[in-house]
Image (cartoon, rainbow over the protein chains, first blue to last red):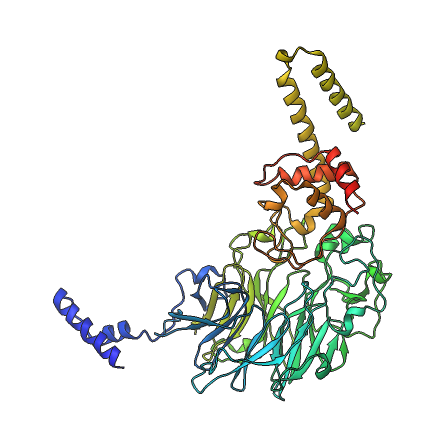
Length: 432
Length: 150
């Protein structure tokens, strides 16, 4: 407050010296902007009418998942440490929406981050930690996290450990399968599937642990759902009290089985799928994949499938099927009131963008929205586009920005993290 | 057929070397022949790349950030260790290896079904595409490397 007064006085003095007539509202605006203002170009994004976007921060590292405190601080998990630190805190000190105060903590890279019941949770590719937050939303002891989960499998492929929490003291962790389709030889043309797939005992699913117990590992947790190849985007739906996940579908149908699938089918199959999970569910990987044109679970070619044979009915169906290979890296159920009513309780999905549609053009690189009515998903649409910065992405390297994280601010703003250039976007609604 | 042509060109060249007086070496024709051979190898290598490598390493050789390593500009691709390149094609790569300061998550399949000529061609192609400019990999080099790689 004192600082504001002195800035105010200084401003008056300067205005007086230069002969500019000042009034109180001008000086207040100078000292403390009151509104978040979208960038003139909406940070390069294409948005529905009435929405605007700004860059909160740029070039902060490989930003994966993000979480926002009740006070509006943004915590960003970096995939790899930058200057030895893997969690970045972005603080907007003057209310203009831009982060003026950027600091970092945590000596590990990773993807998962979440805030629940006064704790900040963050994951490496093998472990999950938590940090107590004080009443102001600050981390109490940045150097002394509690290690709540340890010893999770990391065999390079699908190594990120995404996390979300329910309202019953549980944390859910994705442990991705270290394989494309559980072949005898991973990604080898014609190699058949291992039966039963041995990966599923310790990966290829969602594990449930206690949110407050130290040093848990496989024996302490529950395999909550299985048959999920790799989930990066997941969120607990508080309205339905249910876990929702987005699976990264399998790759390379044509490249591995060229006599059964064309290049076009390779690009279009299988769907990226959203599942509403219940404890004990099996989504069918690696034995089946989901064909969004037939709306059916199909038998995987590694297990005798040919593009025509259906898979077993014992596996659950997705609740939404998206185009193939777009890599859903984050999901967020929107509970805020800033956006128009249709967005309330719907799901935003951050699509990182494809690579294995090649040689056909790549797809994704946008944030999609799925409206939910009475707990049921409606037709999905593109919400925020333009991250790639080019009309057509032929090689994945050509995409300038790639959406990888989502979070909702206390005012209902939507934050989007990009792990290519390390840009944090904030999307606001300014329409009436 | 192509192999025969290359062999006969090589035979002709070496004959020319043997018979011509030292100071009148037919330097220019030899260089042109070599260039033709390399450019033919690059053309054939492009076909191999398209069917075998492109899905992961992409049309621009840029790879996929953090998943599949780029070939364009990669020091290992344009470097001198051709045996390592042959080994990666034959055996694939499923270890955590640092490449130009980065790590990549996906496994590369083995491609031992490719012929020595195809391997020479595709390696010559990737060493001379996009921004890469490095020496060709010859059939003889691949043969020798393959014999050493178990």
